[in-house]
Every structure is written in C-alpha cells, then in structure tokens.
Length: 129
Image 1 (tube, rainbow, N blue to C red):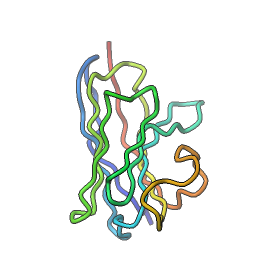
Image 2: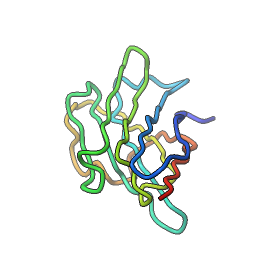
Image 3: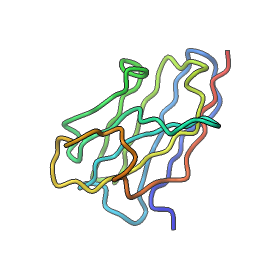
Image 4: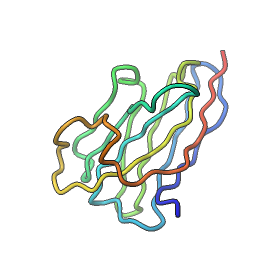
C-alpha cells in the first residue's frame, strides 16, 4: 500500500515553475519530518528539501536553495514544494518521504535515506532547454 502520494509533476521549459504536492491517505503527517528526494536513471536518490513537523525548520540542498520552497499544511495533511527557475538538470523523478519525529528540528543528517519509513511512487519533472 502506497503511504504517500505525489502529484504536480510535468514537462516545462527552462526557467519555468511547478508545484509538487505530497499527501498521505493513511498516515498523519503532522508528526513526521518530510523530505523531497529526486532521482535520475543510474544515480542515487538525492535529498533536495526537507521540512520539520511544525514547518518551522526547512532544509535545502545547495543545488536548489533559493529556487525551491517547501511548505506544509498539517490541517490538510499536505506538503508541497514550489520549484522555480527550473533548469534541465532538475529533470528527475521526485519522491516525498516521511520520518516519524518527536523533535521539530532534525537531529542528524536529513539527507540520509535510512530512517524515512514512508515513500511515495514519485512524480516526474522534465525540463527542456
């Protein structure tokens, strides 16, 4: 059973924007740290943005800082990520993942895959030049 569901991907031109959504039909995301990862064929999954359970803390990889914004609305059990100024190198399958967290600020390395118990099937983002 898919625990998380991503949506919002698509094909855009260089410089375009998209908003990706992550929802959870079964689990309650309000007590989970949620991170967006992306992956291209033959490469490892890369963390790009994470958000604490309350939304107070956001984390970004250097490659997307200032272009991607992660946010959440716990009342709707939804996390979204606004991605602007898209580049061809942003082309990837984007996944959201959730980790149960009793703390708001992430302890450890938020980019590490182990510990994220829930994953979605992914949504494809394709940026053409």
